[in-house]
Amino acid sequence: MAGDPYFNKVALLMHMDDTLLRDVCGTAPILTGGVARSATQSMFGGYSAYFSGSGQYINIGGNGTALDVGSGDFTLEFFIYPTDVSSTRVLYLRRPAAAAQGIVLELEASGVISVYIGDSNTSSFNVILTSAASTVLANQWKHVAVVRSGTTFYLFYNGAIAAQTTATTFAVDDAGTIRIGAGDYGGDAFQGYMDELRMTVGFARYTSAFTPPSAAFVGKYFTLSGTVQDY
Image (cartoon, rainbow, N blue to C red; front, side, top):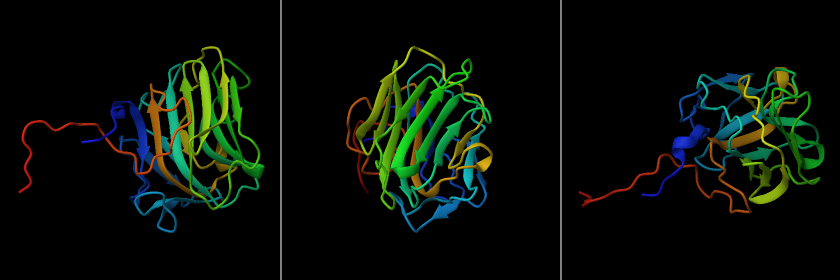
C-alpha cells in the first residue's frame, strides 16, 4: 500500500483534525489565546486550525532534538488560507526570543512571503528568501514549503519556486520552541486557517516545481506480501 517512504524523517505532522490539534509524531502542542479547530474551512479532513490574528498561536515542544535541523536538509510545509494579507503575519518561528537567528517564515503586506534563516553565531540572518509582491491572495487555500537541500534554499508557493538562493554551510539555530501562527511574544499573529503542517528533518522533498499534495499527508510506508483476503 502507498505511504510515505520518508516518514521516519518526519518530526512534526499536524492534520489539524482533532480538537487538541495533536501532532502525529508525539510532540505536545500548547494552544494559546484560543486557537482552535474549525470546520469553517479545510483543505483535507473537514477541519483546520483557525487563528484570529489577535495573539493566537501554537507552541510545539517536548520532542527533544528530533525537530533540530542543524546543518542538514529539511522540508517545512503546510497549507494556508489567509483572511488578511495587509500586514505582517508570522506563520512559523523557531529562534531565541527577539534574536536574529533560527527560522522565521512570514506573510508580509501585499501578499509577500519571506523566510529568514540563521545560525547562532551571527547577528543577522544567513539566508533571506522573498517572493514577489502579491504572491499570496486572501481567502484561498495554497501550499507553502521551505526546503534546504545542501547549500541551496528554496521557497515554494503552490508548487512553484517563489525564491531560491545558495549559502555556505551553516547550522541553523535550533534554540527555543516552535511557534506556529505568531511571532515573539505573540506579535504579528496570523489571521486565517492552516492545515496539514509537516516538518521533515534530514530530507529535501522538493528541489524543483511540483504538484501540491492532493490528499492529507500519509503515515509510514508499508507493503503487503503473501495472500491477502477480504472476508
